Image (cartoon, rainbow over all chains, first blue to last red; front, side):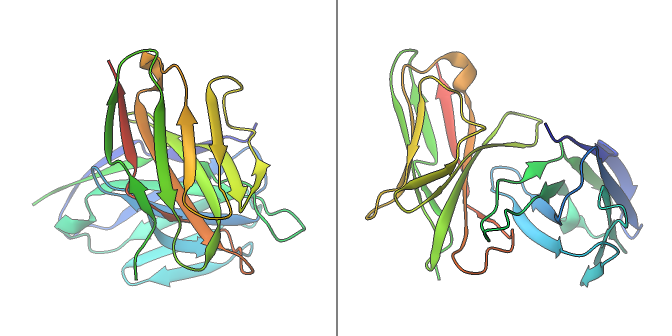
Length: 115
Length: 115
């Protein structure tokens, strides 16, 4: 089955630093998504990517869909305390009929920010 | 503008009992997905449903687990004869009907504890 390798597993950084995390896959995906999960909550969608090579920003977040369609990265600039949480990458294939199978998730990157 | 609603948020069952988890998708969404999350793990796809149809149940255990999404009412994930290994957070997600872009919106999860 499809597997996603997400790294790093955890990050300890100082407030104000930039953050970079990535995901690689053994399979090609048509869509890459990045989610953030706070403790006790469900994942919240941050950025969605639909085309190989696409670079998309959402405020201080920037994500790219790798050219090979087997990888993606997420950058967070000038981190702040509320960025703390678990970040998940997810890949998806889409059926030609317009529906979609489920997402395949990475194991997450724990972001811890030291003031 | 309610999001994906899941209940109960927490459920405690003894081994051998049944657990029923409910999910109401966002307004206008007719695609529902169920995921399971173990502590310190990513989310694992279980099943994808549209109204009255199971589209993909490749992630669902063959025994004791079932899911439905009736014409009226919420989607139900049912676990019969629960065992300790079923303890996990179960997340429901929904997406739109005609614009299934892969952007899933998650509920806050139902946390099942099996004693």
